[in-house]
Amino acid sequence: MANILKQSVILVTPKSYGANDPSLKTELENQVGKVTYNHLGRSLNEDDLISMVSEIDGFIAGLDYITKNVIEAAPRLRVISRYGVGVDRVDIDAATSRGIIVTNTPGTNSASVAELTVGLMLALLRKICQLNQSTKSGKWALLNTISLKNKRVGLVGFGAIGKETALRLQPFGCIILASDPFIPQSVAKNYPVAFRDLDSLLSESDVVSLHLPATSETEKIVDFSFLSKMKRGAFLINTARGELLDHDAVLNALESGQLGGLAIDAFDQEPPNLQDPLLALEQVIATPHCGSHTDDAMNSMGRMALEHCLICLRGEIPGHIVNPEVLPNKRK
Image 1 (cartoon, rainbow, N blue to C red):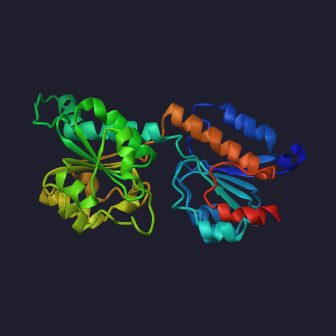
Image 2 (cartoon, helix red, strand yellow):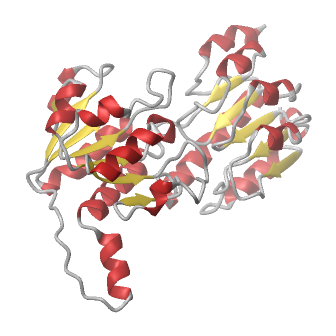
């Protein structure tokens, strides 16, 4: 088995891989023949990857664009081990047709993303960024801000991150609503939430927080219709995926006052265009897709992604396979 691994070439693209636990890199490098890292400081696009994947056997992938063309350019590739949960930037069909296992690391970053969600919520409602900048510039401006206590917070999507967010919001004394057609309402008894259909949640909530994957069904779900159903002046938090937002609709809602503010950690283009008018608005807080960038989450994601990659290269079956239909092909 060791000889099989020693002949393997691995591409590792998460920028933070091994940042808090260097033993991850050491362990990987000791077990395989060659490891190539992403030193560009950003997620890799199709052209970047096509020039890097021709001889790789395993891919520990970040938020890179792993298209059909990338997969076709990697004849030896056997596993794409996602460092994180979302696989919307991986062409699953192309990987499956090639017999390539795709894995992810669910649950490893849920607490960290939930913490950022609540942090952004507080920063937005209490205008922490504006107050910080004002104070540092020599002003002493006491702005009117909003408390979370007794406000209604709507969680759109109630998977692992939505659940962790609800638990962290509970001590603030807010009323927590949730909407998720794939989660039975009986789950509510285990969490401090009341389930609503989406339209009711939007009309009732003072703050709406998105916790959805990026799929064909959820792409640009936050459009003119979605925003028009929200309370005027309500706030929107997106720590999920940039693809959920209809950019023009959100910009219009912010400029008209329909949205009181936006906190966003994920963009459909990363990094975003600095000329994007959203970034110029005072009522917008933007962070660089950093929800999972904590010591605990990075170590957990790194460890699970490493294990999944090496297990597949040994010809064994890992946990958390995104495309289980590939398994019969792998057994042949």
